[in-house]
Length: 124
Image 1: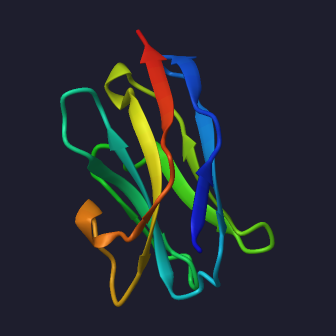
Image 2: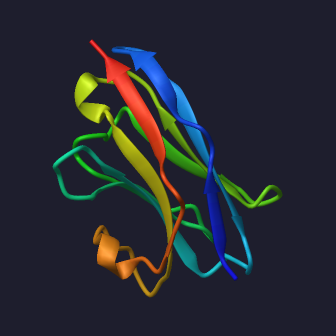
């Protein structure tokens, strides 16, 4: 049974940084794409970043490119999202997700497994 457990988010001032982690368990993820999505109040869930576990190819939404970095640690079976230069518009619940992949996708409906979500709040 796949489990994705995100770390606690937090409250950070604009311009600050935060790192989220997602501990994955339940299977070997070498053939998976791992994604980070976010959902702000009243908005649809949107793609932030993804990584192909086996070769660490990374993909980013334009809104976070240059500020967010996704990475993974094989030994810990953990995916990270390092966020810098945070803006108030980055405030959202952040979700880790997994997709058995033939290719990268930014569509949340194509991810089969989800974490519980963690709140990130950026104050101005």
